[in-house]
Length: 383
Image (cartoon, rainbow, N blue to C red; front, top):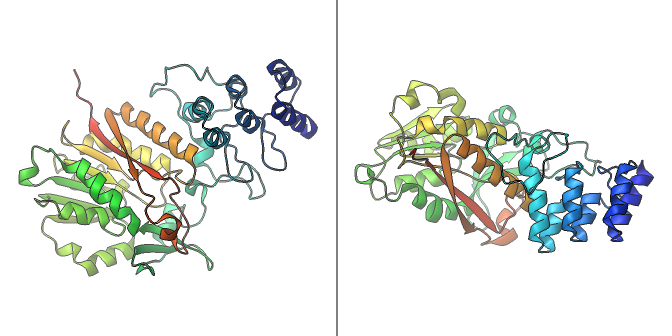
């Protein structure tokens, strides 16, 4: 089987005819095989920029999100070759389904919200570290950085690094600390997120009703409070005891019209504390250690939390952000799932490269893209 897999990869890299590749696959050439460098048949097809071959391999069940030894998927390879057609084929395979079956034609436009948009491999625990299928994603992390229960029982500290950047740090081992939130996100929150969530509201003169899930460093909540008219109601849901203690030190419990709910959003989302408000003008969520399944569950509740069509919904779009392909897939899947509950999303690209690698210091990098894709959702007006 290994010999067949190696021969298949070599055949593709040598740009042999498609008919020969198809015969090798029919004869048992394994599409899951990866050579010593982690190159799979799909990686090889992306290297040769053979759109027809990429389409064929995906239809035959090639693993769209397998990574090589440099942590690149076939989509990343296509992206590096500036081959948009091949990249889109791999990306669409990720959007379409994670079930082990022959995929429908990737050219099919009927990607409805009822299609099974499974991110099984993205959300499940990672395979052994020795496996070339291991993926570099926060969603596969089994430490406190990737487990909500472990995170809530962990210790956090709030510091400033040598450059004066605010950081909320989580210790995941004796050797490593992870940034839960870092000061470089301030630019996303101020000039982009808050501006797009809060402008042109009919009730702005009276103060918006705002719900934020996850306080972190308090960056976005600080900008909500700095609006020309402060929110008439500002609800913050935060579960971590160290963050709550930090909020007390900063005086958040004493701010007018601020209501702090101590616990997870799941504890309150169907209770009077939220539903009794009568709907919020702005809802935003940025939780740490939760994965896409949790975010999708929150999406299902968003229509019940908003006042109406003028209300806005946003979330920190950071899942899969250490890999361009995974980041793209998560963004597009979230758009489809929000459409399924009646929320239409408008995306804005925000350049977040200022500071480059220096912004991370000694902590783990959790956002590696040049452009942050900022989502703002509104309830669809039914005709």
